[in-house]
Amino acid sequence: MFQAATIQVQTVSRPAIEPRNAALDGFRGLMTIFVLVSHYLGEVPHGLPVFEVGWIAVIAFFVLSGFLVGRLILEKQDRANFFTVFYVRRACRTLPVYFVCVLVVFACIRLFARAHWLDVSVEFPLWSYLTFTQNAFVVMTGSIGAHWLAPTWTLAVEEQFYLITPALFFFAPRRRLPAILLSGFGLSILYRIWALKTGVVPDMALFVLIPGVTDTLTCGLLAALLITSDKVDWRRYDLAFRLAPLVLLYLAIGLRFLDGADHVLFRIAGVPMAGVASALFIVSLARGKPEGARLTSPVLCFFGRTSYSIYLTHLTVLGLLHGLVFAAQPDISSPARLLVTLAALPVAVLVGWLGTVVVEQPITAYGRSWAWSRERRARRGPATVSAGAVSPA
Image 1 (cartoon, rainbow, N blue to C red):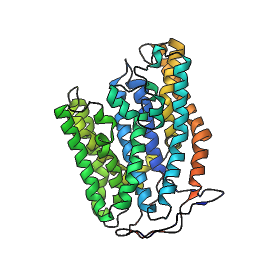
Image 2: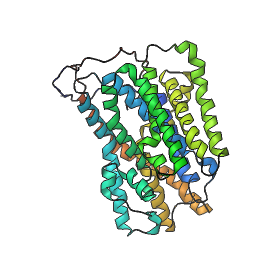
Image 3: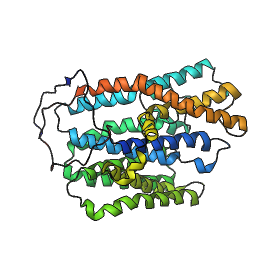
Image 4: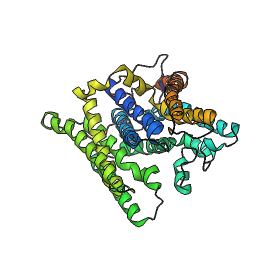
């Protein structure tokens, strides 16, 4: 039984600066570049398949979110005001720039009278985006909705994940968490096998609902458990931990390119391979291994710090430029179209940076002013040992 405790929220005039892991920032930045390259040069009508690397980034983002949130929960769940501070900080971190982006896109849809280049095959209601339920509409309609807001289905999944995970970690005994998470990992794969074999659920449900991506999210949570454990013989398994990500990622890429057009084997086996690869690589970065040094460049760290706003706005920038110049949807079918696409890249980075410094950072700083209480609840399970500083979730 948990001891009852009065929840007290302490605020400070200047939020404490939390430690960041530059390698994890750089990794996030590299994945952001993958998304830009994939959406601008790969996933357009005349795009080049070699640039279609966005799927790697989506999996990595899910795993990284699971890792950062899982580690935060493990370190702070015994604080008396855990739930209050956790959700206030999450809201300040994720909601403001997201709401701005959604409202701007809906304003563009109205302003340009649903011009064909807006690429809105099916218009979801505004409230679905504001409540993070647009992924349910994706499944019901078989459409991604407004294309400029297509990336937001991943945010819907993550917001739903944030609602579930703290309660899971809070109430489940620490010693049972690995088994629970491994069960979730396996059940997610079985769900995809069942869905692909029976066709009972729409194909979209394999990608945009939590059951279909639980394996990647739990990879991050398992990595958080691993890095905070004092029972792992790191010296004995160090080489395996560092080589496995490369092997698994190459296998996942091979399955994607060698699989049939429906990518059945990739969906079943390739996705969890890429998830485990991301998790093990993140563990190496969190442990300060040498491979992280290549990810600490100022450019990658800049993209890492601005990744959220860039991720939300980059399709709007690309679509708006092509729409205003050519009255057409994005493509690279001619030198002129390619030139506009390349010009959209720095514009997207600039817009993402402005969203970060004007909207995201100030409100995130306010969220961090909600301090963790010094009063603690009784902890469940054995104590854990942290291993190095990690970028705040």
